[in-house]
Length: 442
Image 1 (cartoon, one colour):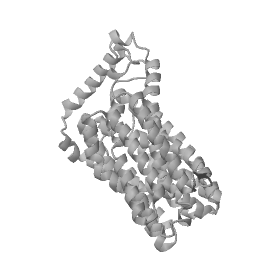
Image 2: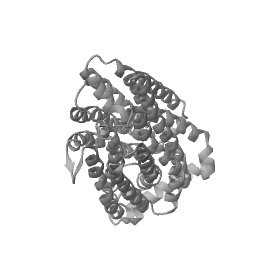
Image 3: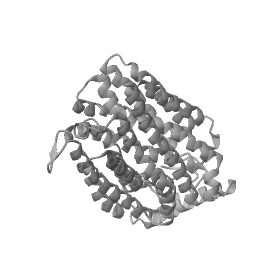
Image 4: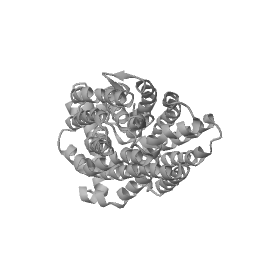
């Protein structure tokens, strides 16, 4: 990295490429691992659902959809207050607490025998995980990366969601046929995927640091440089408008972002939780083949997400990068129910995966173009909570429609419409969210 805007007294003593490499190793990598484990434990219900009915006869499509989505009710109830608490205390310890507690709940999932226990454990899982991503987006990454670096940094970190599915699908295919300490199938899946969360909680608390000034691997010159540049960013934001937490929560731009994310996540989680069962229904493939096949659309989405992060940074453009992926997802949702063959259904699922995942990294850089600190944490919590309400609506809506019609078609049409409307709303966001700050080139 180099830039003519970097103070000469500091830039001459900084190897920016090496500094970026170290930030990737000590900041993005631990966050990447946290996110992989979180997403594995959040969506393993999608793969478990392929066989759970063999032991749980009460697991109708409606009950499954409600249980998958009720995770987000717990998430929403605690999201904003948890984000604000994290902004006042040690964010590292907060993330470690989140991981440990959700790992324990995942283990408890193996004991459920009734639908109410199913709902309770999914609700508790959401309660435990609440605020994880807002803390990452609004506190941790902004402490370590300058504005123009964040789209790439967040996009790279969020490839974890896709790697999680690339790993999780084949792993689920193996675990569903495995016995572990007398537990078989979906119970093995839950307990094996809970263990990393409990263990890594302790590793993470010691590995990553909240701010550059706390890290021994950052030189004094690098600390001074980051501190000065972030202070300039903060002063620029405050010169436009100084946001209190309450002002941030009722700001029209924040509310529009919340609506966009609500519509987007209806499709995102409706797709994610039901994708294995939809593919099984369309293809007729056995559960193990379905689980392994999921790696193909997730790999396609991974490539697009990385490209969007790099392209957004290079062009200093956000809105069209996000909106275009949402429009691609719309096409995937509408086309999938009409697949003439298993191979074509997998192709359309690839388009849908690109749509729901591709622009996510760029998207989460938008709120921090005009918010910071506790205001950003609160706003991120509100936006994520609004989206997570969509995370309840999408899976339950699809389960309800499938339970009453025996088909996913109408549910996929609804999710496609939500994605299209979200894309249109993204294009109405102000150009100020492009945040054309001083050039920094890799």
